[in-house]
Image 1: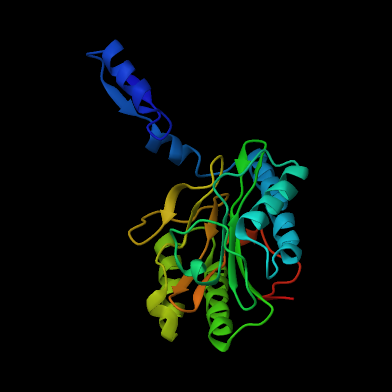
Image 2 (image 1 turned 120 degrees about the horizontal axis):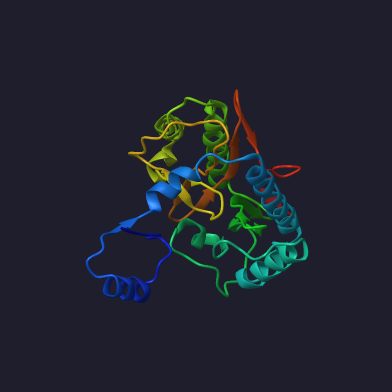
Length: 266
């Protein structure tokens, strides 16, 4: 039997191997490896903390970078350069830095749009340090925010904090999803809530399992995953708050956060 990593092997290599070893059964190791990577060892946790620290520094830097007039791509370049200077080996995924109405479209990517006064700016990125990734999100508003933008921001933070309070070993991940949905349902914006709540993180930024409806895993000590409720409203914009969560013996440790959490940037 020949084992292979389905998520990593390219098509040409797979086709070559199936021809070169014709008659030998092939089996994917992907699910086995994903389960082995789910519970982190102390050295892995240290590396995840280091990667998170770099991304946190960059988000603090973003408070000074994000201003009316700068393009999304110029802001991306500045933040990626900041992380490189701090020792990042690169980024684990294309940075999401979306302003204005683009922040409400999950498939959008940064472009040449110039940020404007009153724009919501959704900023989602991570760093890579010593082979481990980070991933977190904050949403800001430039200069002044409307009542609906403020209400949307406070709602998403309420969803985030309610989920964090629940995290401890033994809690079904489905309970976290239900918690976020219950908080969202209390608001008129609840119908725009995205059911995706997070994912495990480690060597890559998106690992198994994904916190989405249907997930059957239970939270266990030394898991590291994201909690990232988001609500995306056409005509207003999108807000996502994402933190990396380390599960401890009796609760959790939040690996990301700003010195001062703010919506408005001057």
